[in-house]
Image (cartoon, rainbow, N blue to C red):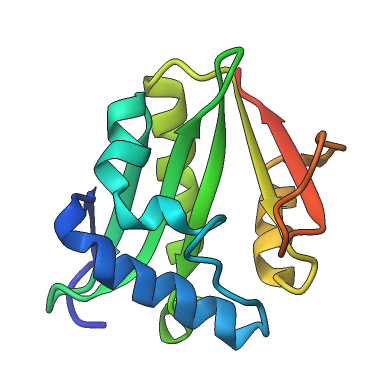
Length: 157
């Protein structure tokens, strides 16, 4: 990559590009998109995240392509769920996953959240290793979304 990718707040104009990113990465790992349920939030990013007091940020390459993303979805008790943190295959291994997670945790603190939870699939080994390096610990939620088999929690200080 020639220029440093830039992070910015997503709008509904980005929905199609974000869906393409998320669905492409899911397919790489043999996971099924679920536009009617688990991924319905990608049809209206502004309502699903921003209007609720969360955020959805995208990482753009110098040509404006969406190469990464994450969302912080507000929950009860000053918690948020880290959702849709994905990075295009050709952009992995360059420290961009750490950049996304650093930004997500800084945003979570800025927005006043005290804990971050996430659900993931065990096939996403690289992501799980990253989360664990940042101190996320496994926990048992009440339920998991259909394609996820693990959940993690990080208390923010």
